Amino acid sequence: MPETMGLSRNETPFWSHEPGDANQTAKEDPLGPEVVLVPVIFGCIFFLGIVGNALVMVVIGRIKSGRSRSTTNIFILNLSIADLSFLLFCVPFQATIYSLPEWIFGAFLCKSVHYFVTVTMLVSIFTLVAMSVDRYVAVVLSKKSPCIRNRRNALLGIWLIWLLSLIFAVPVAQHQVVTDHPDAPNSSFCWEIWSERVARQTYKVTILVIGYLLPLLLITCCYAKVLYHLHKKIKNMSKKSERSKRKTAQTVLLVVAAFLLCWMPHHIIAMWVEFGDFPLNDASFAFRIVSHCLAYSNSCVNPILYAFLSENFRKACRQVFTCHIFYPPPPVKKIARIRMENFSTTHSTTNV
Image (cartoon, rainbow, N blue to C red; front, side):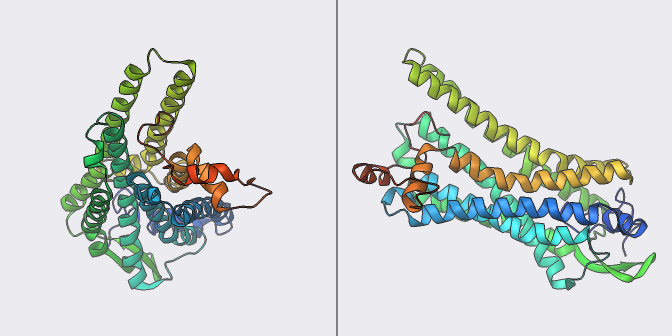
C-alpha cells in the first residue's frame, strides 16, 4: 500500500504522477495558474524540441554521401532519436498532471510510459558520453582514430547504450502502479511503490551515479583533454586558428554547462526526498516545475549544441532545404565538397 501523500516519504520520478504535489495543489486551488501556465510552458518546450530533433534526423537521413554515416553523425542521429522519444513519452503525460486531478491513462501506460521515459533519458545521457569519447579519440588520439572511429564500432556502441538503458530502467516498470489513496478514494494515481525503502534508495543513488555524476565526470574529462591538446597544437599558429580554439572552448563550456544545469535540480530533489524532508509548499512546488522544465530543455538544446553550431551542419541544411527565403542555395561548384564534409570533421578545431 502507498504511504502518505507527502513527497518526503513516497517519491516518484520527476515525470511521474505525484498526488502529494501537483494534485494536492490542484485540489486546494482548482483554478491555480499552474493549470494553464505549466502546460503552455511544456508545450513550447515540446514544440521546440520536436522541431529541432526532427530537423537533425531529416538532414542526416537525406545527405547522400557516405560521410553522412560517419561515427559522429551516427551518434548525433541516435541522440536526436532519444531526445525526440523522451519528449514524446514525457511532456504530454507530465502536462496533464498539472491540469487533471488524477491519472486517466490506465495501468499499462502507467508502467510503459514511465519505463520508456527512463530508457530514453538514459540513452540520451549515455550518447552524450559516447560523443565526448568520440571527440577525444578524434582529436587527442588522431593516429589511432581510423582504427577506433568506424561505423561498426559506432553501431556497436549504440546497441550497448540501448541495452544498458533497457536493463537499468526495469525497476521503474516493476514498481510503477495505479492505485488510489484513503484521502482520495475515487481517484487513481500512478505511483512508484517499493516494498523496501533501502532498495528504493539504492536504485535512486544508482541512477544518480550512472545517469549524472559519472557521465558529467567523463564528459568533462574528455573535453578538457581535447581543449588541452588543441591549446598545445595551435599555440603558435595564426589568429584564425586562435579564433577557432576560442570557439571550440566556448562550445565545450556550453555542452558541459547545459548538461550540468539541466539535470542538477532533478537529482537534487530526488536525493532530498530520499534522504531528507522535502517540504510541500509553494516554493518547493515551483522548484519541482523548474526541474521539469530544465530536464526537458536539455533535449531541446542538444540539437543546437551538437548540430546547429556546426558550420558543416548548416551547410547541409541549406543543401537539403532549398527554400530561398530561409536558406539561399549553395553555389553549384561547392555542392560536391559540402556533401563530402562531415558535420564534425576529425581534424576540425571548430567543432566539438
